[in-house]
Length: 201
Image (tube, rainbow, N blue to C red; front, side, top):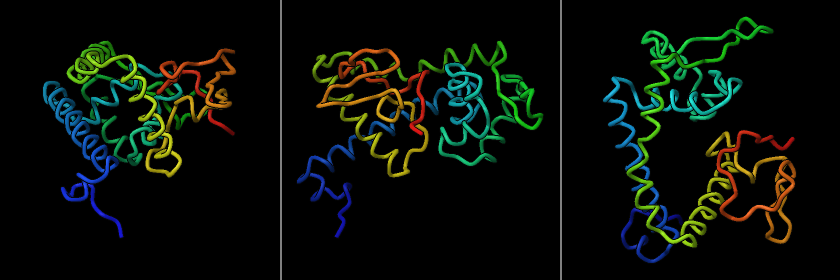
């Protein structure tokens, strides 16, 4: 029989349950910070997230279908958000030359300005992380990457551009290796979001 991590009797007996509740608290902090940023710009949280994503990712990833997978939302929901961003002149469309029905979304100068500022909304979370030792950061990163990898494999999280899901990544006896860079990777060099990520075919 499954027991809820939110039950105090259960939670205080197993470290896994404590970690789940701790992650839920951190996700609540992200929601609050993102909501504050979105209110300041009269946008919804997902609209802010779309602007930030477009600012930092390549043109081929800035399509409605990809964004829907990225944020685990329907294409219709993303399309509605994009329509608002278009109306506010924060983005514009670039039609695919080979398919007139397909287009990429690009930031206008005003959209760029908002995206740059909004992308700093996590600074309140980064500051306490900086106080941790390098060993604590490394252990935390590795644990989170393994958790994300397993959630991706089970279908809870869709798109991932981390080393563990990349065709260039190889692991041998606990040694991480990137075939694209032709080098061994330390625990802290494992990437969460890599621009050269290639999905394993």
